[in-house]
Amino acid sequence: MSGFTLVFVFIIAIIVMILAISKLKIHPFLSIMAVSLIFGLAAGIPLVNVTADGKTTPGIANVIGAGFSGTFTSIGIVIILGTLIGAALEATGAAFKLADIVIKLAGPKHPVLAMQIMGWVVSIPVFCDSGFVILNPIRKALVKRTKVSGVAMTVALSTGLYAAHVFIPPTPGPIAAANTLGAGSHLLLVMGLGVVVSIPALAGAILFARYIGEKVKSKEDLNIDAASKNYEEIVAGYGKLPNGCISLAPIVVPILLMALGSIASMAEWTGLASRICAFLGTPIIALAAGVLFAVLQLAAAGKLDKFYGITNETLKVAGPILFVTAAGGVLGRVIASTSMVGFITENSKTIAAVGIFFPFLLSAILKTAQGSSTVALTTTAGIVAPLLGALNLDSPARTALTVMAIGAGAMTVSHANDSYYWVVTNFGGMTPEQGYKTQTTATLIEGVCGMAGVFILSLILR
Image (cartoon, rainbow, N blue to C red; front, side):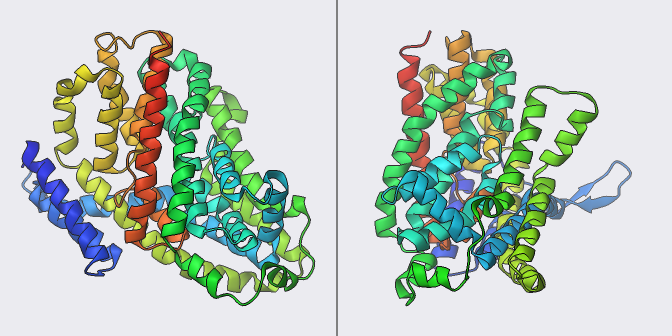
């Protein structure tokens, strides 16, 4: 199966998956896995592969296994370690201390905006999914501290992280796209435009976050509404809270280490220093360092004896998130193994007449189809690179602007085949149906607003 028929079947598969999860109440893991298998077989992925010597090896089974294990490899341990840090912060009361610090800096009337800006800053050196896991304890504490909608805070954090993830180097996607398009020597320009284009994207997202927070209630919101204790009583139960530096260490240390790794990569350092920075900057190692500081925090609070129980509970909490996230990775891998991406690539010239909107549309199609923003960024850049002259996008400024257009498309939209969607919805205490109303819609608005900013700049920059 190929061509428009394959695209049509893909659309039907996504609709069936959404209905199975939201209306038939089939568990997301089973729904996604079943749809992935059926769509893969319908798209022509063979049951088995026959080698040259006549031996057979699993076909669709290999694809499903690779998608599942690949997601665990990229984010599985990150989720476990990040959740463990969060549990330790909650056990010592450090999360509430951090919430107080944020309120003092941003003011009690702007917690949603503070959460979004915090996410945007953190995601410049850190992948958005890792950033969400790291910052989630602060988000939860702020919800309890301010009584603001948990959904609004979740969407604000998610979109803040997402904007920097697709627009601003040293995140790998924008760097790879800039290099492919020939803007690698103008990274400062790309970073500057990334900051500017982030503004309309963040503005649209924050307005939506405040709106949807009034319409959708997560498990977190319902628990807060039913709680009998007020914030002061909850904090009093911890006794004396840790000081600010001790509270910040488990979160700040991983961020700094990942930032160091990104800087070393972008600056092309060599030798032993480069290898050490690359090792320490790996999300797994950086978060492991954060766990060590969390353990020290428990010891300082006299609660080290609770660490075993905290770890056990963390694995119970992280397990369902891991499996649903991995199922999303399976769907993405199945789609990538079909001819759909190739079909989109082959027919890219039919929409090239729309100028600066061409890279946006192509990236949005690829993002929605296969789930990964980084793949959408790099694939679209490869397609667009030879067309820059024809599209009148070959000046340094307009090439950098093309990276921004691709980035805006690469966030449009996040849904069930995107691991980030599952991280946000699960950690935010939302059902998959609520995830489509919040995370998916928010990324659509954010991408469109970002592209509106790109279009305005395209009228000025030559």
